[in-house]
Image (cartoon, rainbow, N blue to C red):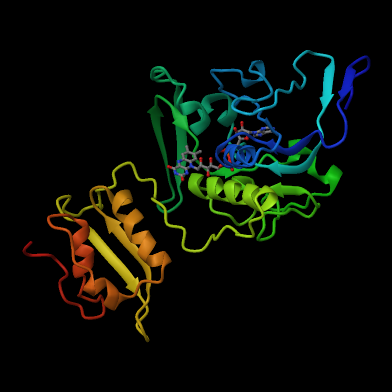
Length: 326
Ligand SMILES: Cc1cc2nc3c(=O)[nH]c(=O)nc-3n(C[C@H](O)[C@H](O)[C@H](O)COP(=O)(O)OP(=O)(O)OC[C@H]3O[C@@H](n4cnc5c(N)ncnc54)[C@H](O)[C@@H]3O)c2cc1C
């Protein structure tokens, strides 16, 4: 809304080919790809500081124009509003950490992953936490240096006023509803990444979706993002740990169809460099690899990953799957 006396700058209809709101993983990938096609692109990036923010993002420039041909200024001076128009708009504003606001002091004293990287040192013993163990029905108390909430993330779609233009969101999750081509319910408005309903919340998928969208919009491509069989690491601090098991062992489980060609459905690997190992096998699984094909694959020795090519004991057999030699 214009405040009284503010100066409004309007530079004409469809000043840009693409306007990206949110300059994170997906937004920047989309913008850079569109710029490769010689298109005029603007990226707007802004975020409200977290309650414990060490840096006030509001003081940072509102517009991120790095690496693009165009330079625009929006709200650069108080009292100046620049109206930007574009033929296509991509919303890629991601998500923000959730706070358990029903817990007193959660906002004032807790931090989230947004604040984690700004911590210079541990703040000392500052807070006492009491919680109920719902299994045992007991109440327990302890003191901690820092309380970090890690209770999930939520899209901040409310502040975008999407209902004004009619972009539909899921009323429960707040995420933007898109079709297979990342199009929202409003023509020329698209959404990618964590802000979208039903998509994996991962950097590589947001980047790939952004690039493919730009190619469809400006590169005469019709290739859609394939969200099936997206493999990713689970974020465990120690990828080589299974509770109460010997840490010198790898643990591998492959899930295959028992019928017909025994297609591989999934692969679990707990061991050194698990992410690297899974990245390679992800290609095979994406290409529809089967168990017999895996058995024909010659392992690379000596590696942990070669054990996957030797898997032969089924859970149903009840046999001991421990590897005894190399
Ligand atoms: C702690 C943490 C660790 C993670 N680790 C991994 C990992 O190891 N591997 C992995 O694949 N994924 C990881 N993720 C997930 C990954 O970060 C996201 O899936 C990915 O960044 C989503 O990209 P995006 O473009 O949708 O949003 P983001 O990259 O979050 O970008 C959103 C951008 O929009 C801006 N913005 C927000 N609101 C507005 C607004 N109103 N106006 C303008 N700009 C706005 C923000 O400033 C931000 O720059 C992690 C996430 C977190 C929180």
